[in-house]
Length: 563
Image (cartoon, rainbow, N blue to C red; front, side, top):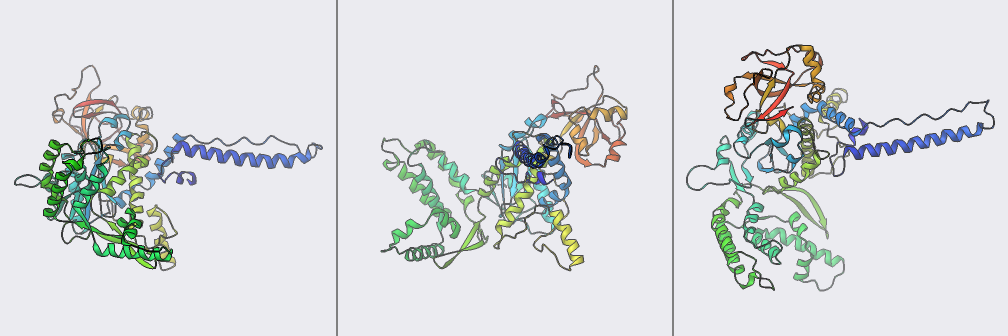
């Protein structure tokens, strides 16, 4: 396990192949050192072989393959799976962000490769992930996810969130509620806001090309039309820069020189900003567009920055969304995460909860959670849950305005056990900052959610009614991985009419009879109960049993082959 722990940190390049090569190199070097010491000690007895017989050195120990490493890593995650799920479902927030990505689903292999096309995540103002689910589309399949989130807040007695930032479906024309408001109808006071970065990208689609020399200036001017900096924070930062220049002995310090010394990173870290308001933003953007549609919007070769007709059409549509990007009154979007001393002046470090930018950063790290280039549905689920747990703990530590403790551990169950024993023995907690998570709420996470919603339709091929034969056949198929982990499926037989799609495959007389079942959730069973499982009846309408048969996945009525 000491070697496997090096692999828990899902950083760029930390692959199983790299870990195996590193272990093999370390073992080989250590073996050569020991052989050198052994042969050096034996060399003194070469002239007198009768005193001590010299034997050949032992052969180096064989290093397991990366496949074996993957299996052990999966079992390590399974041993902490209950705590990981409880930690994820114990996360809350006052400002939520929701976004979807397709990149991570490209790593799915096997039958799951074409079933899940989107990974939708919901995060809070700290960047922690409340839930991540895999779906075939972004629409109705998310209704169950939203209902589970509402139930989580209600059961925990936590106040509902006030804001939800999205990249689409922020409002609706005419009367009635938007789709997102209907989806989160359990939170009637929730305000849906449009992410400003995505709004700016919509306006940028009216440009002729993003390689135009005026494109960066246009994006900067659009940002200035939307935001304005807090005058007090900017004045304090300018005073700090002025004091720094004085300490460095710079003569003739002017306002222009001070402004040149302030970087964009310092502005974002030490200064707050807010939106200008709907009316002023519309006026300023219209003035900017009219200016750049003229002579000032062309480069030295006369190429215009904006496509006149396209930009006019885009602005007429996006003009109504200006109200969706304005800050909500009474909601604090900035929190102090620490301080920095420059030039003898203490500057606060701010963290902004506006928009879904942090969620976009999370999507960039998602690929590192899944080692290699592909993973089946089971390994994909394990790696993703482990990555979400570590990501949430890192975000929580980064949000605290205190010095990071020397102890670093992501095994919350182990820390909780240490605290329990320390309270009994020492009368105090050794890790007082640790708060154990609540009980797992039963929410469906990641691939457990199912690519088409919380339940996926499967087809069972009943090949035998002999328990021993069924148990032997498991070891021959891909269900071997599930059997090794002690995970089976509880199935409820339903009639063939439940498959409403006309493309559904009907039982063929030439083949063995089939049962159409609907998967509920995976069940963790001890090996004793697995070995004593009985075979299911082939008759339609049979009672619910634990099934160990070859499964054929069906999505939208189309068979994808055996799993």
